[in-house]
Image (cartoon, one colour):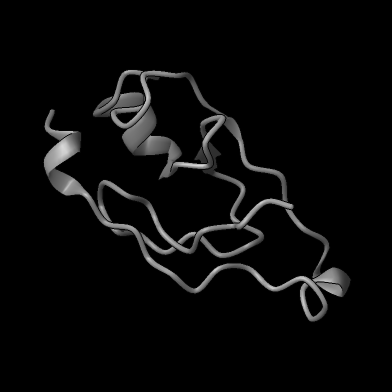
Length: 80
């Protein structure tokens, strides 16, 4: 099951479980669409892979399957 990390690793913007602009790589590194497009140019700075839109977990499933609360913030890896 996806962790649904709560923030963008570059800009630390909140990305709640229903964020339509949350993007992930195959290792679940999580970024906002703006950082993926403008800063990262579509390449994950951690693994070198690409991105896909993060699926939205239905609200009715969040109580039994909560998102992660652990924030990952690595702005040094996201230099423009």
